Length: 84
Image (tube, rainbow, N blue to C red; front, side):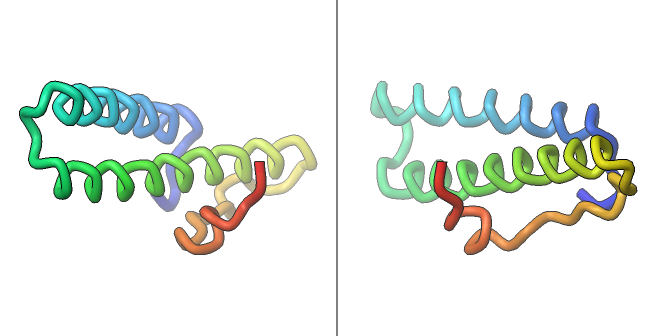
């Protein structure tokens, strides 16, 4: 995701959300292998959190007159450790 624009990140988020919805529907109707689908869903949720974090970083940098292009995807362990 390095060098992406906000619109690119939002597009990625949209695609991930669509995939998440499809996966949740497959889990609900039993057409997906439950364990594998849940693992895939967990990985997808982490990726979504990373995308949202990157977007927030870019917007904060823009707001404070810094280069939004300097924002970087943070490790999953860091992003998943945030409190809401």
